[in-house]
Image: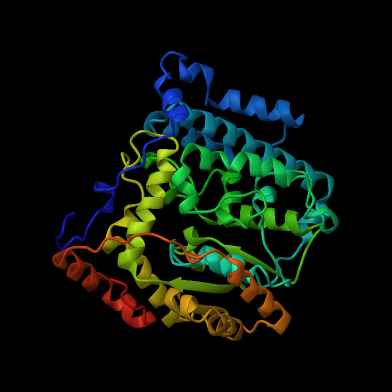
Length: 424
């Protein structure tokens, strides 16, 4: 690994696990089957299939179509998809289009849905690999919170209802689909648990607006990343709000509990749409986070392509100096009042590992949320029932002394301000 003032680029040394034989054979036969013809990703084919499957034709506002076209062009020209990658992408994109059609149909027939109010949502916006998943799952045991499950993110229509929420047949359907990623890359189960009834990040229901950096976390598509940087993120945030209105129409609770690390750079824009949002920021040693992040993201890219880092995606989350810019933004927003008392809680990963009860109590106090002893008991019982390694297990490599010292200098201000301890 390199050790210089620019820090290590973990992508250069990351190696994927060998694919299962059935996946490798499928990809090897791509040329035999003329995969671009067999699995088309053109606009007309995708739109026609979604219309046929739903019997609907109105996709809503026209703004999404330009985003969709730019994205498709980038995927075809830059993503270097293998056969499995094309199969996954076509299947997913048809589903995203069906979501648009179904939601538009419901909003037209029931305009009162748009009158729903999203009140004081609680948002986990910490960087990825800092404990956001286990904290999201744990806090989700509090009955006052409504969380989005995988099945309702994949198949939101018809709107979920309280009486059938835990028995909805879409749970099994979603579970069968989403666990295909465990079958494609068995090592994925050691990094992130997938299931139809598990909580998901907000990213999982942003796809259908086709304007989100969630796609940059799935494909090597530099032209789309450049296009995304020129667009107003409010379009995406408003789509997020539209989905939440729909999901709570028939089943709502006091607060939404949401998790969206990819919005950590957009906090001011998020607060324009959700001015009363209560934000939880999780913090962990940024040196060790990078190793885990690259391992996870490399595996996700590996689902679809044989060249997982070809497009240089995610520089801002891999290169230390670029990650430090995002961390410095958090300091700025804490200091200028964008993140204000009563609406923000900063959580150290190590604190949650060592003292989950004390950390939970402090989060509720920081955000002025009601914590009942029964809810706390449910959360602690959930953690106790988790298997060993419940906070994630990953073997972190220690940089050489030169590289480590260089990275520590880059992250010094962030670690000092938020009191983030070293782990290596």
